[in-house]
Image 1 (cartoon, rainbow, N blue to C red):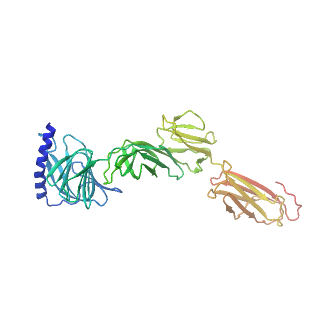
Image 2 (cartoon, one colour):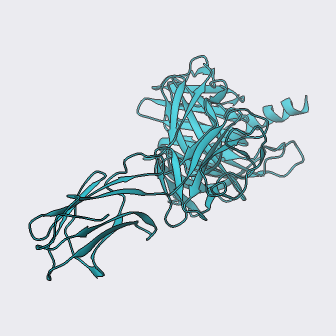
Length: 450
């Protein structure tokens, strides 16, 4: 009963307070003189007293003189109220909910529409033909002219054209959101994509997915994605832990409250020098260790083992041999897997012809390069070839196509015989393959020792 009397008394006093305020506050205070930050979604501004304004791109506002309103129960202090003229665009207002508001925002808008946001999340939109107000979470007060009425939480009120009669409909309901694969791997420049889906909300035009990153300082919003329908893709996330929430948006642009969060985690890796990621596996040196990123709190297993332990900070080969690292969230069965394999390069070297004489024969060297699993390596994998005749290094020109290398060895000075050696090392100097041949001189019989 007391609350009702207070509300009636406030509504009775507001026309006089607001009218006198606007009559005397013709001086514009200009841009908000407080902390403001620009984002892709617009500008975020904190007013004196703590009210936060989220201004959509292109929104125009003016600050007017501060006033006091009796928003608390009788006998409580009046609330210092910031006055903002919303010329055009959209503003979202966030004020902590309280039985005795410590701050409030009075909005002056075209078509003699006014509103008081005194707690929770409020929205005001001004376009060419319409003024729309929404009490998403927390009550508001709204007026056309001096006809002040409560705007309860969960209600949208619109004023179209010059008709003072408002049109009302509920704020969109709260959907639920799910992630089809909540644990993803981000390795080797691959950008994993999370597939999110929401339940259907009545009268929703579309849905908005919000991605929140967990950190030591709490959670921070890193992205919002519009989903036309009930499904949306989220990509390009750095390793870490996230929560994905959803909210329904109606045709006027009013959105409801955020859903409960659905967990999403992206696991990455910091590779040591000399390691690389290829075809789903990390190729490592014998003593190389891969630092896991974003894996704190996960469980790990290897190969086909059914035993899981807390995920370590780094992983390597199993006694120098390849293995499969398996990761999962505790208490779940869904896993992500990545192979750990020796960074082995095998070079098959062939020197021909088998029985060679110099200068009659031209000696050709052919090299084929393979990885630890016998697959042909790409041309991007660098090698260090060395050609020696006896003990002298010979400069030759190599031609390479994919995993094949070719060269010809010129005849040296002298009468021979000679020993030709070809050695191939990987880019880190580790031996990959070799071959040699004894080449007879011009007066020798065609006998060659290998």
